[in-house]
Length: 429
Ligand code: PSV
Ligand code: MN
Image (tube, rainbow, N blue to C red; front, side, top):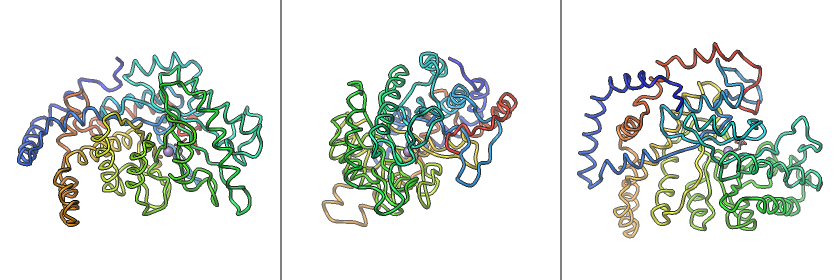
């Protein structure tokens, strides 16, 4: 397997930190043992945790106002996979990449699959795009795609999604994620019921082209690019559409796609309870769909989301939602942000896993809100960093991924090999 960062450098860096890690790990093990928690089980859980990287996430993002390119930005999907391989090598939590079509359309899927495999990567859910016009397309998505008033536009958008499924089959993917920006900017512009009916018809046609072992994931988003109404604007619409479309059609929750203060963990619980929770796009936000790094604003919310996921998994062991980081890195090195974010999501998962469930159930039954929330806080406030570090150390990752990455000089090296192309690599701006 091709290792983009020298394994000697990683080992050397880890060796310098191993004594401190062992001391911290043993101390945490003793503390957890006093509460009958086996640290090894948690370390195994951390080792098994995985979140997909968005192919577009390794390019520098931007806003509607400006984009400030970083050095050595990947110019092709191959260079993007090289960057993803660094993230996976050091963090050991991101073994798959979620591809976006057409931003990262492969000319030869078999070649790309081999290239990824050689770097220890595979492909996660495929993302279609009918929210932008492409140079060679006959119909415009200006007034919508899967929900458009024109049958010709709807057919073009359906065809695109089916093509994405075909590419995904060749790449070994098992899911199609559909997010449409369809909606309206003026009251009266769009007939709400008709546009939703069109969406349902289009979704069913796409679903019929889905392989039997695939899932179709419907992603809702409150607003943007449509600023008055959006066809799939909330989890209710997403749930209805998923239910109408078919058994393997599920809802996907992007943490940034809700109004401020919405109780997202409850949405997670509702969708899970009715068998319709299929996936996540992790990120964080302060105001809207900010696409900030996971856990950077509200790590407690991330923990509460995982509390529901872990709780449901215990009840339904076959529950296996698709996890992806969906972030835009405007002011950081995307490789660093994605490594850090993957660890933040993993941390929330581990903290949620060590909540004392029977104690919590007892406090809930006793209507003891103070102690119920204290039970959550006891897990949230615990520093589980030694568990994450140990998981990485045992699987060939870096105890400290960011420091090791900086030491490797990877960014400076690729900056020499990848002169600025003018493109963003992140698709949008
Ligand atoms: C748009 O907000 C979005 O973040 C959706 O979540 C998609 O997942 C992604 O962009 C790219 O398709
Ligand atoms: Mn998303």
